[in-house]
Length: 152
Image (cartoon, rainbow, N blue to C red):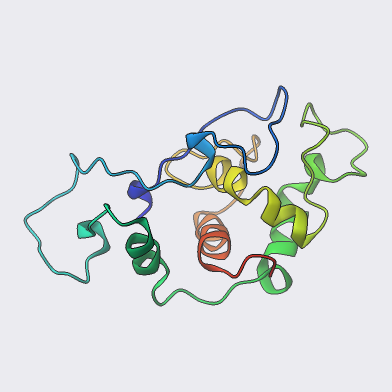
């Protein structure tokens, strides 16, 4: 399912761009390269066979049937446990995390959502650098930030 999404694998070090920068690696843009897609199965319900020319259709199909996740029932705990050790504005040692990248509030998380997705989901996530996040929690993170209502 995540093979259709392009993700940047940039490290946590160095300067940070502003939320919403137009770096394609951070944009959550749908990958339209289907060279590794098995086309022998033509079931229209199969998300691997989506027409990726329309990102809205792809996003709708990805989000179809996923649980409703929000900051209050998932994001807050996930960020506190996995991200805020470096990405809290009050973290005593940010371990080279950019000073302007913090996830203290739901607004912060949504402002940085494209970059959180780019670094923390996909086939080879780079955040958190020490690992430890289950595949199920990474999937829930992707559902929350791709399918949830911004700001919730």
